[in-house]
Image 1 (cartoon, rainbow, N blue to C red):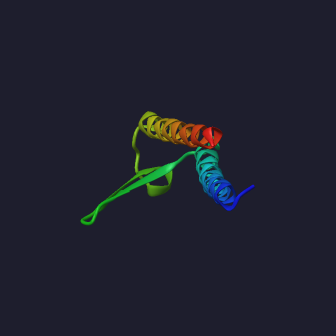
Image 2 (cartoon, rainbow, N blue to C red):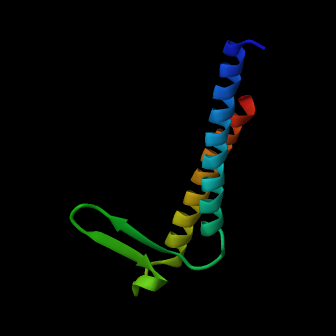
Length: 90
């Protein structure tokens, strides 16, 4: 093998490692959202914040929190799948 081929292969391996770490991180986020435990959400902007959930002494609809949680899981799953597809193409 020549140096150019080795350099190309090394770049692909480095990219694959980075993608693998991203996939692992997204999997951890999905697992933490998918425990079945009640969730709390805090929305923050530079001027104020709003908290929803059991732990914040608010009484929002559990359906709303459940929908937000499911949307986050679905979005993270789609992102993870796109990363996996990119990794598979390497």
